[in-house]
Image 1 (cartoon, one colour):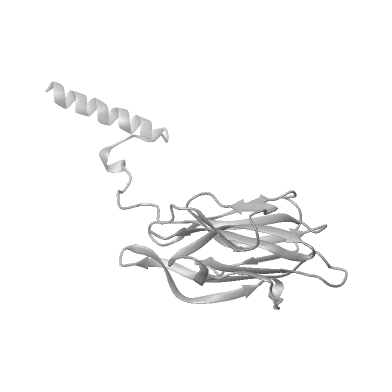
Image 2 (cartoon, rainbow, N blue to C red):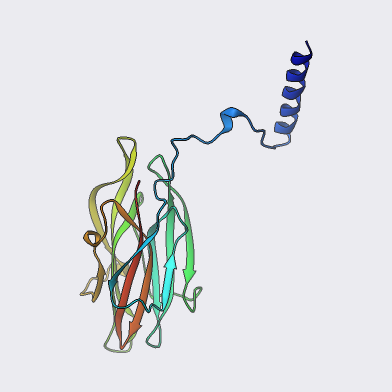
Amino acid sequence: MAKNRIKQASALLAAGFSSLGLFVYSASAQPDPSGIDPLNSNQFYSCQGSNRYEVNARLPLGYALTGIAVRAHSDEVRTVRLIGRRVLPNGSLGERVERGYGAAPSAATELSVEAPAGHVIVSLAADIDRRGPASQDFAHLKITSQAIGLENGKVRLQGPVRDRWANNNQGDVEATCFQSDLPRQSVITGVAMRESGDSLTGLGVYYGQLQ
């Protein structure tokens, strides 16, 4: 009888906490052990140039890059803004986050581009304008993206890749990080850039492999 009274009192106490909007721990509230973070690594690959980058921009662990905005000024990459979404265990993408990096992280950017809904960025290319009044500014910015989803219980890249150019302005680019440069099932999570002599002399990417 004493045990029953204790159980009844515990239930009443839990109900009281719940009515106040407080979380009550129970065995059923434990995290699902199958809900492993599918993007739990962050590595770096230098696509072009040295490691003396002016901007090193990287999203928090578990987030995939879904958009990017850039600005250069006075022969220097000054602003990189990353847009990302968390990769969830069910193969979907979480809410949108945006973070600024560089000497002027909040400055207006020259070019910006985002992947289609449900896509993550797997390749990146950019170019600096070397002619005319816009010299030393970014001239072109291109992303390649791929859909993400659940396949045989694992989060995987799916379907064909899609290219997008900032402002729909296509052209030759001097620095590219190709999808084939990275291990299979890799997703870009950040970028590193350097400008020198009116050229993008340094480009690298942070990436994670889907588990």
